[in-house]
Picture 1 (cartoon, one colour):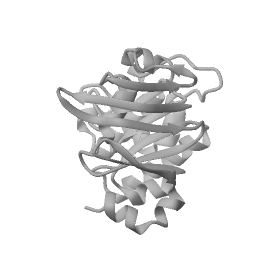
Picture 2: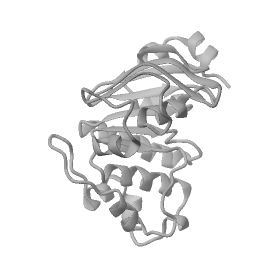
Picture 3: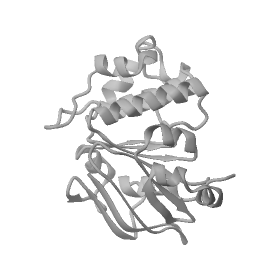
Picture 4: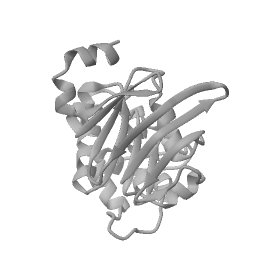
Length: 233
C-alpha cells in the first residue's frame, strides 16, 4: 500500500532524513518509533508532500507520489493527521467533518458522520460544539475523523497519543484497531512504546534520520538492548 525507498529530506542545509526506507501493507498498522527530533514527523511530511524529498521514492497503491502536491496525494486516498491537529476552531464538529468530505472510493470503507460517531462516541455528544472549545483528546479524535471523511485507504498518524490522558489514549488505541479491522493501512509515528505495542503489527525505529530497526513488534519487545539504545529517555 505504501512504500518508501531511500528518502532524503532537508530543512535548509540540515540533512534530516538520510535514506529512510519503510513500507506498510494493506490492512497493517506500522509504528515509526523514535525520540524527539529523530525525524518521525519529517518523514510523515515528506511522504505527504509537505516537505518535498530531495531524493528517493514514495509509492502509494502502486503509484509514485514523491513529486505530487499534497492535495493531489490526499485525493489519491492517503490521509494525514498532523501532530498539530489543525482543526478549524470556529467551526463545529459537524462543520469540521464536512470540510474533509470526499467522494467514496472503490474498495475502500465509506465514512459518514454516523459511522464516525460510532467510532468516536465522544464526538457524537459534541457535534454542535466549536472545535476551539474541545479538550485536546477530543480535538485529536476530531482530526482523525475529519481525515477519515476523505475515505482514505491509508492514514498517516503523527504522534496520536501525545499529551493525552491515559483513558483517551486507550480510546485512541481502540479506534486504530477498528480502522485496521476495516482494512485500512495505518502508519503512525510515536514515542509511546506501550501504545504502539497495543496497536501495531510491525515497527521501525528512526534515529538521526536513519532507520535503525525494522521488524515485528514481538521482535522489538524481545530486544531490551535495542529499546534501551534508541527509545529510552
